[in-house]
Length: 264
Image (cartoon, rainbow, N blue to C red; front, side, top):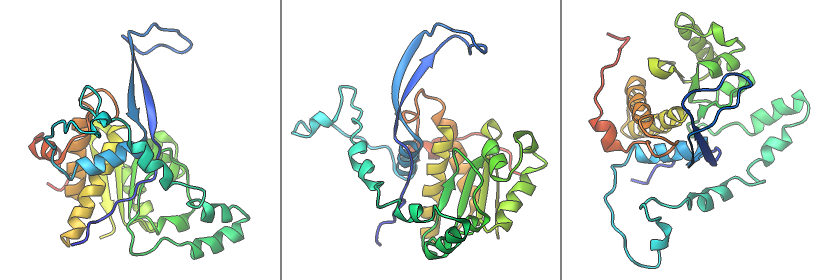
């Protein structure tokens, strides 16, 4: 069977992590205890999560050949991923988008001309979020948003997104053509519906890899994908930095924690 491909568009960053005893008040200067650096970026984090969550943690050793300089003394790979991923986004990539930058009538024509291929599933992790045209929603197979992003994309204020409105907001997205909707809720888990932070990046990657695995097997259970992605996100926040804590598939398999199941 030919391998399946998940293409990810997103940023690759280098994070500066400042550690202090407390969060400063507005306008206050506070002396930090430590400043750390770590690789990050929603694109890089989601890509690593997508890969790790469908592979077991590898056990390797130093080959002691010309390629060993790719490894640091700590045994962690250097950010060679930059060389691989940066060329993927070029001026040509965004050429169709520039063509749609004219008046509204031209944009409508462009929507039809550059419509998303029906054979490709599109997962949108909308961060930062902003309202999109309702015509665009019909191309989205999976929409993953947190509560703030759900508010922005549904033209609400943040306080209007609460437990009693989760189903209403999710149904609006479904009515606009989205196939599956997941509203991530931090420590509260996630609310999901379908038409039948760094932890957020990990959730996105784990959800995507599980969806593709289920689809390949001829099945789709959104609950199973959300539960597994929540486990991955919970493991991630146990370590400092955006990428160090992203778990491998076998780590997720071993993770066991109680959760509330609204179906029960």
